[in-house]
Image (tube, rainbow, N blue to C red; front, top):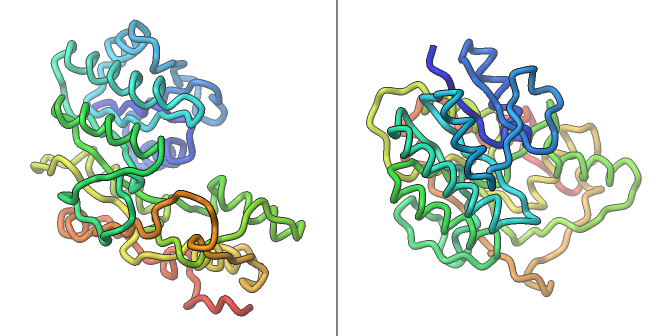
Length: 285
């Protein structure tokens, strides 16, 4: 079976994707920079900012599918821009074998004209969104495919935001409130990874950009209420606030249109109620 290389395999999505691919019999190999835990003995140490190291890993592993998931919020220039450029240049130097998927984000939009289709004009507000948009441009120019997603949540294992929510619910102290007027197309991690696995093995022609996200937009507060209930807590314990009354410069509505993915893929992108097995969330507790 052809090899799949997961660059940034020690991140939350990377670990979940690796587990799913291996469970389904794929020859999947992850790279890591800081956290090799639970990746297996074949995990490769890789600093994507190291051009020679990137070329060496791609040459030695000879992947037919590459997922670029690596990023570091403390070094967007190095991890997102230089790292993506190094990977694309190595892929090109080795003949552009197979497919290259570059993971991006709904944060490339400004939140003023949702829902966003793949063809919508990006206009990022944050440094993270701006870096990702530049990486998208490099990927598309090199012939890679861009996958945009949103907030990724899960329970087994929990994502970092769900971990923070559980800690707050347990201790009664929260690092931040949850905005009821900030909308995102949050996606269940298993659904995202199933869609990515399907893309990795399909022989069909694929679009240049694809949105992989939840089918129904949720506020951050509504999502937190669903997660609280799934964790065994009363949703009424979740603190709420309004983005419009804060001083934060964040997009207000990053709802993604996922109709193209739903037509293209057999893997479902479920609503939060179906993914978590929750009824409609009554935030009143």
